[in-house]
Length: 375
Ligand SMILES: Nc1nc2c(ncn2[C@@H]2O[C@H](COP(=O)(O)OP(=O)(O)OP(=O)(O)O)[C@@H](O)[C@H]2O)c(=O)[nH]1
Image (cartoon, rainbow, N blue to C red; front, side):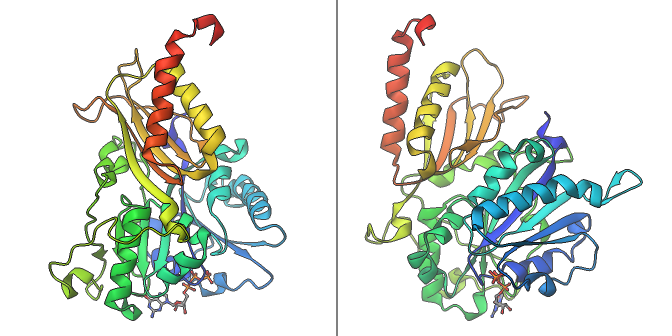
């Protein structure tokens, strides 16, 4: 199936009170989202968020979940996405071209992502375009200290929105940026005031676009951000009032690992790195390695993206996984540049680069010895 023909879904996540609805309010007023279906997923008995969304169009769906958080969210979402084309069609025409889902701040977004990527009735119509995570600059440090789900929300993001710049002090701001350097070095960051963000900054974050543009692999992979001693650039303020710490502390540099590692801090368990393989990889070695890796440590592999040089193929294959679930691999028409190495970027919990390298090496060195009919 051509991924570009699927309806893109943007997931807006972030911890409780981190500013998701405020962001959503700004987004839905912009022309880029005029034909978006907005789904708000709330948990509990008091549906409040939708009342806060100044959404004038009829394309707003309110979901209420109660019971087991992750199971009900998944079930409700499948039903909504499956039925929605009918509910929102007129004269046989679908009324929306993209979907924006605001998740409850309590939830680990992974089950929703898995549903999008794997449920047969969903995955054949929709594709995950991007995960956008709000992080509160004023309270984010303490949230990351106390809530592992907040660390996961930040780690799996394709784009980080740093909210409430007006009430955060410079120290809080810097500390949070340093922590995000380690948790998710590659996701673009935008500093927001009262949720103001241009829609084009949070849309089309995936590799494929509905307009059929050539996939921009380097923008998507951003492997350069995963160096061992990453120096992270500053977040960009998104409006004139945006609070940019670089303006307040010129010359200040923040380093990915300049704090003492503390095993009790949730984010000190998170690793972000790029793994490269120079030679083309035999397909069966790749498949066996990934299968074993994912079955043993899949839940600790929060995010993987990669461009692969598969032995015997002229075209690159891209893979994209969230925890142990992978999108079907996609073949790109051409290599984006002269670099033919396989490159995989990982964001993991308690799995380091060494473990990834060693397991790959073990498979590469051992598997070819196994006669084909035994493997
Ligand atoms: N000072 C300030 N307050 C903000 C900003 N952005 C959001 N808020 C306030 O923060 C509170 C929480 O914002 P919401 O947008 O409701 O956050 P949420 O993540 O949707 O919250 P939940 O749905 O409860 O998880 C609201 O009172 C907002 O007005 C900001 O940039 N500055």
